[in-house]
Image (cartoon, rainbow, N blue to C red):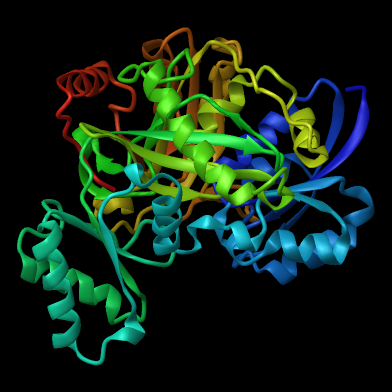
Length: 469
């Protein structure tokens, strides 16, 4: 490898960070050296890192200490998980070490409060908001008082709602009418399970439709929008089971999804631009640098609605995009920092991400006490067969002193298939998953034609139906 040497800090948890490291390492213009602050000894990250440190709680102070020790060798950093962003990792690292970070500041960690998101959307583009109400813990003195307030809101909006903790909870705590409760008493029981834990609760009108994930990089002045993706939140095939961190996702060989058309995509962009213009203000706001908008949209009979906004790349959705970037990802990062980001182009390829997960993940088994060793060697051997159109990104895996890798509690590893169309990409992704040796399971219908056609037909009917998450 020839080219300018560049040192990059990657704050890592999961397969998303492995995809980021993979994309950066493929630079043709730079010789990249990685300094990885990791939640565990991810085998992919250990292999690629110049220096690798394990910080199990991803504490911002400890991350900053690692950066300070190596700051003369680090040109910039990227934060992949939300927790350090919410806790102000960019503010701390930049002020104490001078190393530029690619992620929004603490002030713009938009997922820190679901209610704050709703108020912002209401101000910028109310047409994309469901009806909602926040129930702050400090406002009610008794259970009967808060119950009366909840009943009053349900009388106004109807019983079909989603009940969520205001603060981030990694997707946990969300309850949806028809999935988690079917009566007001059950709804209130779920409400109190959050409320009694000390969290404010937000109740939102349930949105039904077809979901898509919108992502965009930002330099503070402008957004560079990435191709649309579709995530699968439910644990089991045909969208059964509990919500998870995401069991897989797909991207088509164009910028929008098969059940969307160009106008749907343009509607999303207009809505996000309204929010961006409000946060950016006049001119530029470099505190938004990174990916301030990873937006979950629901396409309903009344147009596009916003489910939630996050200020970091999606997992698994960013794994769909990074492997097919046309531009050098290191150059993209420098342009974000320098404030001259332009349109980002991707190959006209489809991608499918499939996750393999532990036996007790998502309620597949109540318990599993067997061997948790995972061997990826057969999957890696397939990469030559597929001419590098198969990528393998370890996630919640740990390389231990005995030299073996072990599955931990969350999503273990994902495979990314790259193809001319979704069907080809799906076949490659599933082949990779089947060749992973370990006590793991996966959904088999990520990007399946029948699932896509179901979405197409729902959108064509106009009065679409689906799952609220």
